[in-house]
Image 1 (spheres, rainbow, N blue to C red):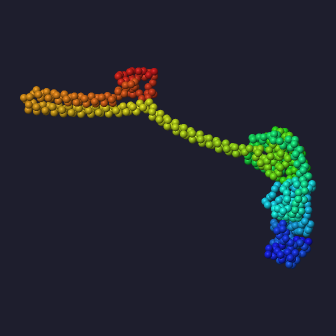
Image 2: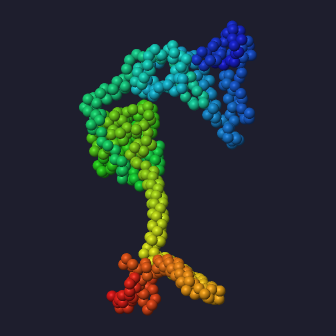
Length: 514
């Protein structure tokens, strides 16, 4: 008996049903079950495509190609089947077993961590075997009357289906009922309650994980992915930390004893911390880490222990007793090994920032110093004396020129006046011979007035001249220092024992440099 899958349109469903076709609500497809497909249904049946090249073999209604996907093969291997051919052969055999379409199974739910997408994926088990199950979301709306959880003992009605692509048999759930607590889960809950009552899980016993370790122990398989992930993270974060690996069996007969020995061995080495873990796996594969001996070994260890068993959805008893629980080995490495490389990069950035700030500060202070030096040089006594000496020299020269100009003008005017007086006197004496006394008196008066006028002007000029005189500035304690009739401009111009002269406003003071 075989199963023929049909492609029936919606408008023709009633006609196909009348010819014996059936509707599979779970897989949303039409099919016919029988030894031979009726002629009336052949219009909706499409046989599997044959291979483009190579020989074919017909088994029932399935056409199986014996060609190789990788090209021509030697003739002696032509009888070997491909993986696809074998899986198709298994699928065809499934289709010839009607019992697989309506089967009742009971077992304990395991490897269930919630819905994936819109459907439920889990396993059921007994003491010796596992069976994968799939519950479609559309069926769960009616069939699932309770909250599905790991550890439940359930009864399932459904059908077996073989998936050719993955080569896996799954139980497609049609009905499911919760009939109690699974034995293995019940035993685990009892052990957990016992250990919790003894205080093994109390927070007071949790030891802090060192932030700057020098060595970290690792208890896992040397061939697993966990040690590779830990080493990769450690190399990136801090290549200077020493990693000490204790190789163990993470599952199987000797797993418990090797893990316990590893914990005791590394705990006696005085390490900073220890990672106990493995990569992901099924609940049965991770069940080793629920063993009471391992839990007690972790509790008794002096060294802080980080558990990293499985992934985020998996929890084992070692996770409750460990000083720190993380989801994966990579996270365990991040928890126990600080990111020194990032710290070094931060230090370098801070160092550069400090250097830049100091350079800017020094540049600013240097500019301020240069401005103050320039201002100090400008206002120094030496420069002030030099400027005053130059100004005094200029004013002395100007005063000399003014005096010469005044004297010249006065001389010229006096000569002109004398000439005018003499000429006038001649005219007067010539014209007024009869009045000599009157003229003489008038002339004397005019001469006195003129002389008084020029005397006052001369006094004003003399006062201005005294104001511009170099000696006038010596009043008030100032003096001009000279050596060999040459001005002393700097202290370096004289030495001990030299004779110098200090000119004051009212005289000179000879002195000797000591």
